[in-house]
Length: 544
Image 1 (cartoon, rainbow, N blue to C red):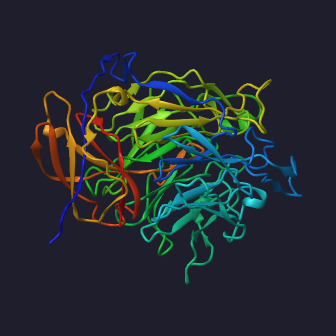
Image 2 (cartoon, rainbow, N blue to C red; image 1 turned 30 degrees about the vertical axis):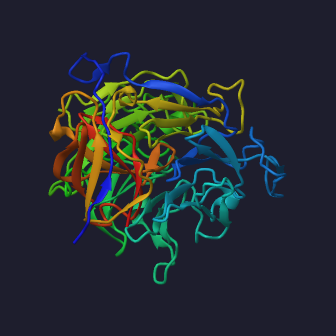
Image 3 (cartoon, rainbow, N blue to C red; image 1 turned 90 degrees about the vertical axis):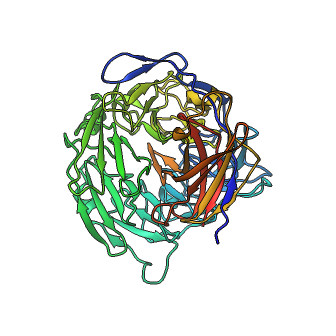
C-alpha cells in the first residue's frame, strides 16, 4: 500500500486589469509586472546562470575578459601563462548568488567557461561542459552546499572533442548528452560509460550549418515523452533516438525558412506537459536569413516577430504561426509556474554577437498558451535597462524571474560603447507575485516523491470564492540558461485525482507524480499550486 506524501500550500486572488487593445495581443494595465534592482554590481556579468536546490544561483561569464569587479577570497589567484589579457588574475569570474540573503560569494573557476553549457544531475550537482581555449575540453562540477565553502571542481580533459556553443540535456538515465558546438558536428555523453564513451557524428548538424553564419549553434533540445530528443537547429527539426543514433522523424521546415538558432538567436520552450502524449514546442523570434552577414557590415535587419508552435507527436506535425507584439532577437523564454511563458530581454534588430544587436526591447511579453489564438500575448511593464547579447533570465522559487547580463562587446567596458557591460541583477515580478497567493501550510523542504505514485498537496486559500476546478499542481525543472536558451527547462502539470476541504480555508489535493523518467528525469524540481492562475511560492521536491 502506498502512503501519499503530504505537501502543503496557499493561494491568492487575481488583481490585474487587462485592457483589450486589438485581436493580435493584449496590452496590460500599469500593474503588469514589476522590476526591482537586486544588486548594482555582482562583479561579473551574468552570461550563464543555474538555480540550485539550495536556492542559490551559480553565475559565471568568462576568464579571458580581463580583471572583473570582484576579488577572489583568501589570496587565491588564477595563473595562466597562455592567457592573452591577464596572466595573473586574482579576480573571480564566477559567483554564487544567495536568493534568501541577496548576497554574492566569489567562486574560483580555472578554465575558460565562455559560451559553455550545462545540466544538473539527479543528486543536484551542476555539471558544466566546454568553453573556449583551455576550457573547450573541460568538465566542471559544482556540488551545492550550505556552508559557503563549496567551489568548482574541474577536469580539463573530460570531453573527447572541443565543445563551444553546444547544448546539454539531461537524459532519463541521469547522463547528459552534449550536442554540437562551433565547427563540431557530433555529440557525446557525460559521464562516460562502457559502449558509449566515444564521439558520434550528426549529419543533421552538418545539414543545418550555414557557411559563414552557422545558425545552428546552441540547438534547442527537448526530451520527448517517448524518450527521444526533439532537436531544432537553424530552421529545421528532427526527433532523434540517441540510443540508436537514428532520426525517427523529420519535421517540416518552420514557415518562412528563417533561422532561429545562434547567431540568428531566437528562443524556444517545451510547452507545459498538460496532457501526456500531447507535447508541443514553441519557437519565437530570431533574425531573417542573411542578417548576421549584414550586421557584420553595419546593416541591422529587423528581428522576426513570429512564433512557430508544433505538436511533436502528432501524426502529421505542422507548424502553427503566431505574431508577437514586436520582433525580438536574443530573447529569453521562461516557463512560469502557472503554465504561461515569459519572453524577456533582447533587441529588435541585428543578431547575436559582438556589437551586432540594436534597438533594445525593454518590454517583456507573457504568452498564454491556452488562450485562443490572437489573445495569447500580453505586453508587460518595461525595464529601464537594456539586456542585449549575453543576457539571461531564470525562474526563482518565489515566482520572480532573475534577470542579469548584457555585454555585447569584449572585456569589461563601461563607457564609450553602445551597450556597456552590465554587472547588475534585477528581478522581474509577474503580477501574481504581489497578489494574494496560495500558501504552503507547513514548511517542507527537499521532500522525496516517486514516479507514478500519489502525492497529496495541502494548501490554504485566502478569503474569496474558491474555484476548485482551477487548482493546478505543477513541477518545474530549473534550467541552465545562456545565449537565450534555457537547457533542461521543463514544466509538468500533474494529473488530479481529488480535492477536499481539510478545515476552513485549508484544502488538500491529491495528484499523481509523473509516471516515468522520460516525462520527468530524476532530480530536483520546484513544485507549485496555482488557483485561478495565481501560483504559490514553490517548494523543492526530489523525484526518484
